[in-house]
Length: 292
Image (cartoon, rainbow, N blue to C red; front, side, top):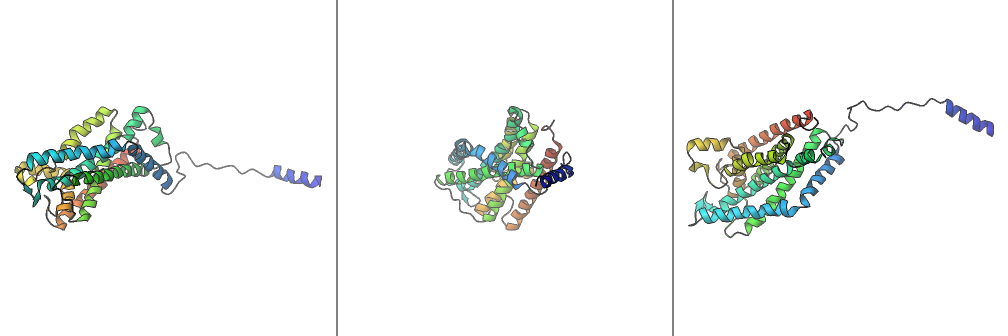
């Protein structure tokens, strides 16, 4: 019995140990989409803004409702009609989607910048996530906040007498609402990569996002502008998002009164989003201002 045990131990000792093969440096181990990691980062970003929902969701609703009240009282007197509806109903859809876009930008422009300032940027770069997965999670969380803000704004708008939010073309409301939120989420992510302090981010908000939002036909029809300013308005991508979103409610807009007119704008903005997504992806992949 002892001889048999010794023989077994001898054979085990003589058996060659196969070397463990580790992947080469930089070679990915997960060859498909890392859904677990993507979902985890998405939920982290959603919980971050949802913990302070009073500031991130309900406060924008109150602020935008004040815009509606002020402009309705100042410009909507005498039962003023715009595009066949009263002024409050005309301006409400533009305010909703404007609030959605601004909050989408605010959400995606915060995480990377806060990580760089606080020294926690490594928490975004170290997990086994590709650049596309990282971008998808950040943009997805920003769009989620935009949708929640849009719902809160709709509830707030309904509290104002005279506002009618019945939808003539629901597809346009959904499409333009989402592509507008994605557009600003990508811009916010790009701003967050570029910025080195909160002042830089605030500068983008104050000198780029806010002017483009307010000068996009939210409170007026661009046909009332001089021809030169009409051309400028039509260069502004915010104009197409707001006008298309308004078309979904009213059935009329500055970009046309038929589904085909608005569909062309929807496809154009979708193409803009796709190009911007490629740009952001390439910058993330280069590590510019993130891995230096």
